[in-house]
Image (tube, one colour):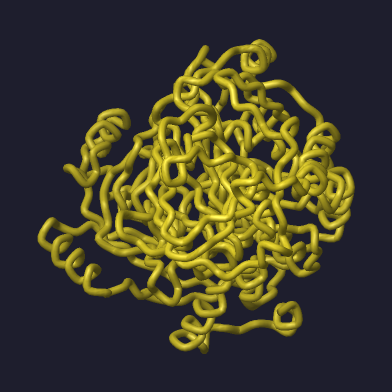
Length: 295
Length: 305
């Protein structure tokens, strides 16, 4: 079940009896990720009754359907047809976030062993991790968990063989070339190198989840006193704001953000986030006629 | 039935573990099959009814008792105001479903009444019930309209300590050798104590993947069986994470999830290979049972009073 659409090689595999997984080239690259989000937007646009939901990830797209309404192979044929139609729609508008992190100690219990494994000092691991900005490829796992990449290959590290039963909220980890932040306490196998006092997920907020795929994230090392101070502020409702917004123009020169894809996945609070973003960064929304037409 | 449409933001689906029992309980009391019901796991609550209600208990047998009399399961019962419903020792299965006429009155969050504990949303104030809570329900149909209903005995699921579940090969099956796949589909696995609504951790012969590099995280699905490097599979259940980075060797079919959801620590699980066509046929059969095997029954004299 292989085929080529544009430059992207694809494979369709069933994930049970109610989901097809479309696998693109399995690598972490913004180009492939943009393709994934473009296909997600196109599929969501069609609003089929049998289509339950769509979950874009780094280089795969999960399409969940109701097997009582449609046959799996009809869905498969439909997806191949959509893939054939897929063209470069990708363009993004991103916000940049600077996330304060207390590295090491009880907040980053795997920092020392990761440094040892990499043949580096802990300070060097921190400098490498905080020394670049990351592309936010997807949200998933638990509400607001952001998958960021790539970390410098020197500090890439495998997951724990046996996942921890509970990783505290705010933990910053590495898995392979990915890095990410646990928004709530959850089980997990990532190498935990630090913790942020920022609240990434708050069900009481108008927008429970802060960041979006396509955003940029960088980490800023902080000391214990700053951690405690920000932790207190977080508890009393303080939330992180983006440091800047940048317009990305894709290789085709097409400008504008696929803002519409956010609401297309059906989240009732997506419009709230969009509106909040419009208020604070209204001038940054350069939606082209094409993407505006796809609302 | 879960919170669909929000997984792209990392919001898990949640919902009942055993959707067959949930739907049956609701249909028995004349509700929409997806109305809110209570999921009761192993240790049941004591519930005092403040008004007359029609209830049905399905799923695992946790020895339900009303005012000292055993409560028949898989049928509807009229409960008088002031009655006390209690639960005792688990006899089979581990999750009971309690539906009440009209459904429990809790507000939907993102389109669903399902509780998602880790995210503190849905259900009753986003949490498990505790001592002293008062749970209102919508007023359902009149008892004369619903009548006495019962699930035909031969269609009531039997929960055993050894369960076979059908599974379709998963998206990362390629990273497992033929010998490992063979082992996976023939071995007996034991449900670990660490199992919960998020996932069933299994213990058994080690299943090892051969991977050149770390897998890139992708989406998950209900029933997806992921295999961490320790070789012990985890079946993802209702509160599963929306994405994950362990290779998925197989996916348990939707129709067999209810049976798996009733397995408890120490029970044995075996995976049987299955095709998409068989999976769909099984799901259709289950829907047909819910549609046509819940029938009117003759009232017993005690209940006529």
